[in-house]
Length: 270
Image 1 (cartoon, one colour):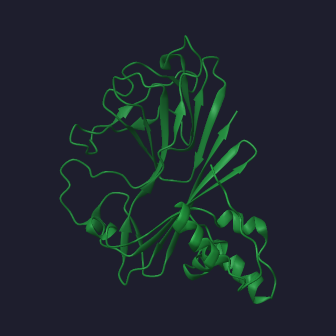
Image 2: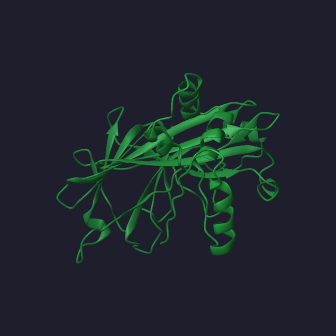
């Protein structure tokens, strides 16, 4: 991988040189100045902090600029073919020790209320060792109430099924079975904010923490794939029989013009 860093005073030609290098070598260009201006324009939390430094004539700290670097998607003619709103989406990743933070920032750039859903799809290796199988591993839940967690599944048409199931726990843990994912994703609503993936000796090696109202647990049905996904969601697929408007969808998120949505989840690795 080739990385080129260009330093220089304002107006010294950094942008001009970058444009020439991009055209000649087909590289991707990241301008921290452009990133900073976009954050302030979109009114994000980090953008407001940066404005505080700039208004005092101070330099924006390096740590703040690093936090702003993200995967970004802005609405364009292509996105509008399937999603009719003007928006700004940024996804940030920050590693602190053994904890990886993933943060979503969604800004409504449209002139009307914008409806959306967003969620993560992190996959974790399971099993970890040769000679082990997925059925040697456990899931743990920080339950807000006693009893077994309740979940729903997805139909063959990709819709939320109304029937509710229980995930049977033993001493607070669920041992994965060959049929755990036979009906695809397990969808949990408003029951916990922390889920553990555990080794055969019942020690957690992944902890996922979130504030999202829903989460899914998934692995490809019937394939014994070497991974399990623990997915925080703000929104989900339509329920069976739903025929309403977008603002009537279960768990749909909404933003008024100019509003910004920010949320995060955390993955800790032991």
